[in-house]
Length: 198
Image (cartoon, rainbow, N blue to C red; front, side, top):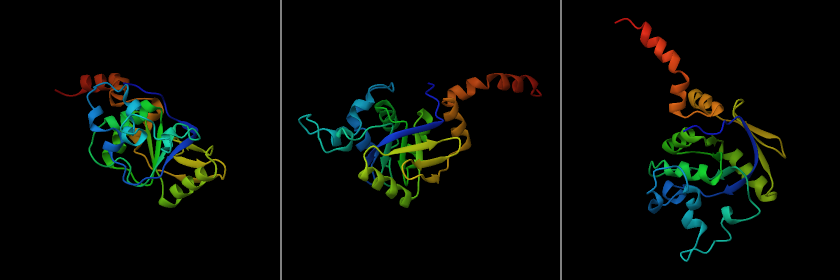
């Protein structure tokens, strides 16, 4: 399933300064029955966003009207726990296109990259600067430049580089998942197969 191309994103952010956010907190297990990637955003952080009587928890960042944007900024060790792809699906379906943290669980990071959510890992000190900037001004924007592999706090101009696998980077800039990539090179694959000695 193809997704939107990711090159450069400038957006305000939703801050979630909580460490060790696991995939069951991102999307509780009781919501994993669907097999398509649609509808999971409604239940993103369900137990943190709503009380047991389904009333909204006003003080949770995703419910706070002063925060908005396509970038979610989380604490250290974001996406730990089970390997459920649904956690990345929920983040994408909610409308986030980038998640920033000082550390990601490997499986969660790969699940994000497979569906068009860019996980940007920054230093602990840079993450702290982002949280401080957003605390001072909820409208603070970040610019994430995938081709240059940089993230910038727009008001201050402070910038940091981030790493990404070259294959995943190419896929994201083209809007490809793994199947799209193979379909894009099918002629090369056919030519290789025809010219392979028997």
